[in-house]
Image (cartoon, rainbow, N blue to C red):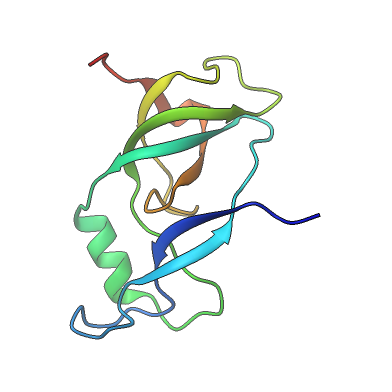
Length: 120
């Protein structure tokens, strides 16, 4: 069985932005929602000071680091303990810095960090 993938932007080490490896296009395994997590199809993300600081100070690592936590998107999947959201809801949130960020097509976020986004 082939694992579903998604596109992301990340890095393996904090490098100057002038370095071609400072930010890289990545192909990662698409996560699945479990427990209180929702899987969000990311539509827009931001760049803020925490993203910059983490990118600059990350030592060389084996696994790619994906940053970006403030985002808006649509719920694509819900974990079995989720009570606040359903597939198709438009949401916005600030994720957690100890998890993969929003510079990816799909992001897992704990439902307790998420709110319904204003309607267009």
